[in-house]
Structures are given as C-alpha cells and as structure tokens.
Length: 257
Image (cartoon, rainbow, N blue to C red; front, side, top):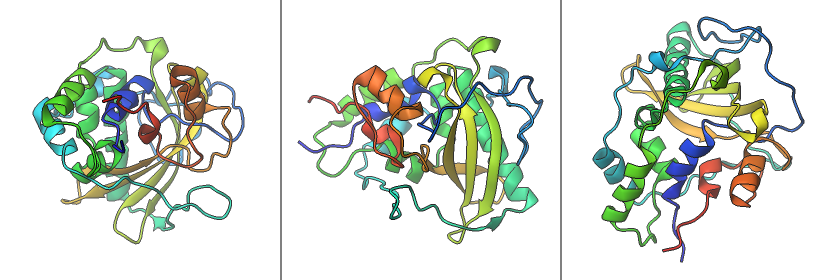
C-alpha cells in the first residue's frame, strides 16, 4: 500500500544531518577548528557546540499536524547523467549569506545538542511537509503520526567534543531565480557512514529578509556511487540503497502498517 514513510523523521535524526554518499572516498576533515561559520572557507571544519542551539523547538502536536497534511513527494529533477540538476544563480548578498549561515549553524548545533525538535524548527512548514510528510494515499491516522513524531523528537544527551558533526566548507551560496538561496555544504559526522566527508545541497527561503528556513534538502546530489555516505548508511543500518541524487529521508524503511 503506497505511503510516504513517517519514519523518515526518525531516520533523519538517527542517521544525523544531511549525510550522503560522495563520489569518491575522502579522508578525515582537516585538523583544527574555526570559531564561526563563514562562506567559502575550506581552512578547517566548524563544529557548532550544543550550547549554540538556541532556536525554539517545535511541539509534537505542531509537527504531527503539519506532517499529517497530504503532500506530494519531493523529487528533484535529474540530468542526463543521473545527478540532480540544481538551479543556477548569482552570489547571494551579505544579508542573505548571513541568514543562511545562521540557519545552518542552528541545524548543526541542535544536531550536536541531541535536540531534534529544534532541528525540525529550522525547516519551513512546506519544506518539512515535502521531506517528511505523508502522501494522499497514506493510511496513517493522526494518532499514529503523533506517536511516531513524539518518539522521533525525544531529546538525547549532547555529543562530547570529539563526536561533533561538522560543517567543513561552504562551497557556494547562490541567490536562485525562484527567490530561494541555494547552498552547497561539505560536511562530516563521525556517527554517519564511517565519518565520510560529503557534499549536500540546502535551499532556504525567507519571509522577512532576516530569518531563513530550510525549504529543500538534497543529500549528495552529485553522487553516483553506492559505496559512501548516505547510501552506505542506509545499506548498513537498514539493508536498503538510495538512488543517486535523491533525498535520503524518503528511502528510510516504510511502515509495515
């Protein structure tokens, strides 16, 4: 019976942030750390500490009600090579760049804090529905959705300093034709896929010109290999395989009822 997996929310938290397969193996991130996130910085990784997670968490009821709204499955367009056809754009201005870097810092800090309710608060409502909601043919009841969400949003202990997920570089920050801001983020997480360093795509939107929310997440859009990152994490943890360029949460195990 066709349905969009609500367990995707659990998978997103369990597999951690935006980890996916890179086209080739890469060694550990560079030694040393940076004190703040800046665009186009490849010098050292930035691992936001748990105390930097300051965004207000979403409630279980708010998330459940949002995810219960039937939403079409997000499927990014592919080019002839089988990788995602990302939109082009022009370098974002200083205000937009600062806004998306602040949102990314919250996303990683709240992941490192073990605070999934604040992680999902970084998403726009539409972005959260597209990534984690149910489709029109789902048979999930609101009560079942709420139970899954409650379990997924249960906080855990903050990570110790030597286990923090990191943003290793901001490769590009582009203002795109549809008004969103697209960001390519090189990142790594010791809890995910043996710590492989991976490249993921994020798109952000804003309604006030200051606060940016995550509207689209595509895990390693340029990957054509099943041997690294998110593909490897799915294979190891669940015995599944994600296709190249597709958003990873949709490939977590489907509910059995």
